[in-house]
Image 1 (cartoon, helix red, strand yellow):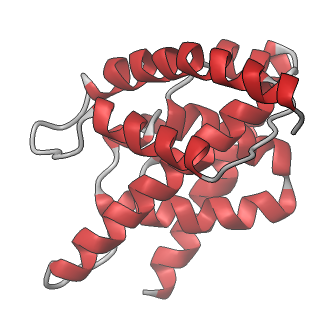
Image 2 (spheres, helix red, strand yellow):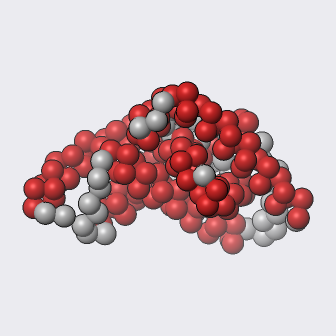
Image 3 (cartoon, one colour):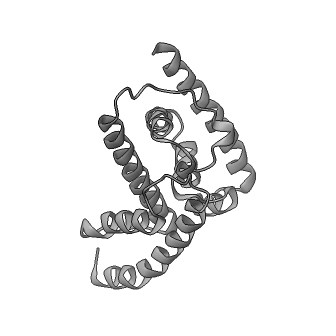
Length: 178
């Protein structure tokens, strides 16, 4: 990244950080009461990962939000795996993705199942996987995610329905194996 891009990123990142913080606060307000991760902590950790690696070179808003979604996803998955290791049992439970809109509403077992299924979906349909990440891990609405991905709201709605059904099928198949 040249000097001009670096200076622009330094000026724009705090603005985007505030937007991510507001989204996390809004989504975490719906969180189950015993959740220990605060929205500010999630955004701070994601932000540090995004800017801490040096020269990021984000091409545009879509690229930044995709990186933020992936960072938040990894943080939540790492926390869920750590908690699962510490727990005894740790049996998988069935997930109804119809009622799950964002990751902050999911327990650790659900989060790990969604993570594994999402990794498979990325290989099949990258755009739908990106939409799920933005909706599930960042907490964007379909309209906001469509803008970030530069697709129509109709396409976002269609991809959201497809991806939810695909993830549900993948997760139920995993549960049938266990």
